[in-house]
Length: 194
Image (cartoon, rainbow, N blue to C red; front, side, top):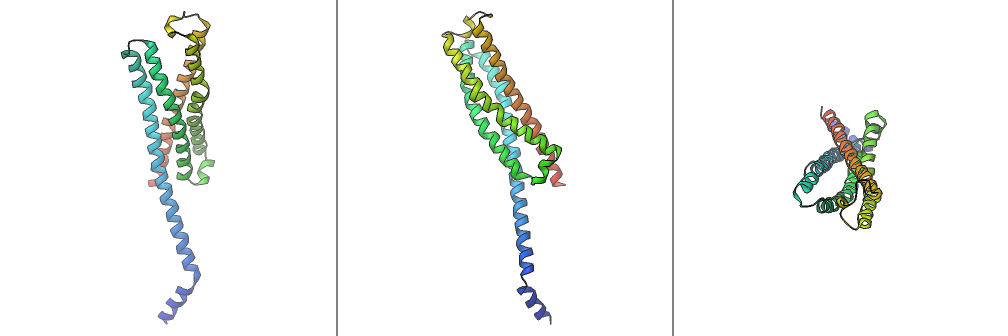
């Protein structure tokens, strides 16, 4: 009788379907865990790179190089690369975030806040690279000389300084967004492990 029961169970498609569904759920959970780890790594690396640039590289360039013009040239070149990498990193951060949580998690307030932060992460470097940096570069070329040579009240210098402040503000927004998003993702991961 036991053999017959085993034979009937083996031929019953329901246990196979249940096992297949269980394996699929395990795969999805592994993918989510992998995406969550990669997500935290990308967020941490990007926030660290932005902080290092803002608090170490840019101030050091202006402190060490013989002229503000040379320091500005160096920082401009770094910002251009950082904005391109930042846009790509933000897209990857958004993708890993979407894979790391179930769709229902995005409907919660913390999910909506996270999506807002990821949007800021993506938008800030894109705006800097697409709008602000090209205008700053064009203004530098139009000046034909170092910016320090222009009077403080010169309209070109005033406009340049205003655009520079917008550029700095975009970097600050992206850095804060990355740090807050990292904290939220870390908390989400800690809850998942419990």
